[in-house]
Image 1 (cartoon, helix red, strand yellow):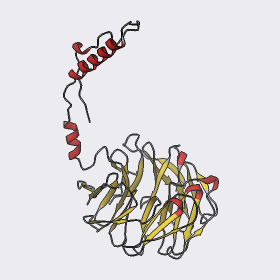
Image 2 (tube, rainbow, N blue to C red):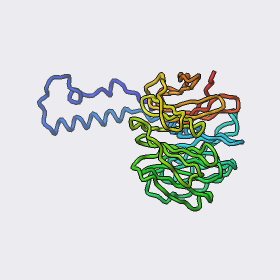
Image 3 (cartoon, rainbow, N blue to C red):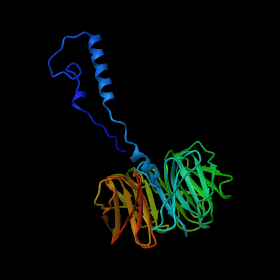
Image 4 (cartoon, rainbow, N blue to C red):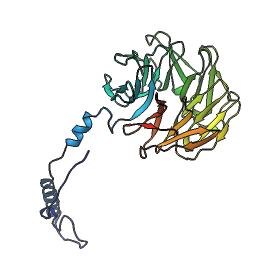
Length: 338
């Protein structure tokens, strides 16, 4: 938004408003009156606000005020979600984005695609929103818990999962109509959950917490903690035994033995890393100050992203092999990986 303001010499404040450093012996009443007159004079010299840029911005499907938190895609759509109920969809990279705001404007923080192509989105207001594969009809399901949920996923069997504070897990096996809640009884925030196959899933969270299920989520086992109370803000596991976690100070840790041990991998940044994703092109991490990293031959290098110093949180791979990267200030940009 651009606010245009023009002043002339007639608007220059009188000496009593803007003293030149010499003390002025005036009464409080005269001083107050002088300041009031000065403010009125300045106000009178304000040009009318130019709101044309504001109106143009409102016509855009993607706006600078959008804070885009997560991306997903199914066979027909690319989907982005964010603050104030934001849902963005398009069919191809050449298609325009279509903007939709969910009822009540919930703050959406995660999104995932189910095996049948339908979509789920998690809101900070403890809700799961479920949509058809075309993202046209969205149904709200309240999560019956006082805990704050931070991440969600749709399992290979179509069940909905959400994890959050006090190591809480919630699952619905009937498309969100009813929910079961359990906890690992640890006072820790769970920040990620991922199914690597129909029976095996892993969760990570605060204080280096790692837990695994091998029976589709019916029972969970706490594994050895990641050293030094490392707080994984996101995680990716390529198999039950091999995975990566990302966090503050540009740190990435890797395990190849199912979490029994973790090794730090060098990165070229010290910025916080918020997300890690695997695509057909490779493994990528996103973070603060426009950070996008890729892993090649066990070495992380930085990719150039024309976004400025905004935070990046999520990415997906497009049909042409490019990456779609999302983040703050309405960031939705394609990135060449070569």
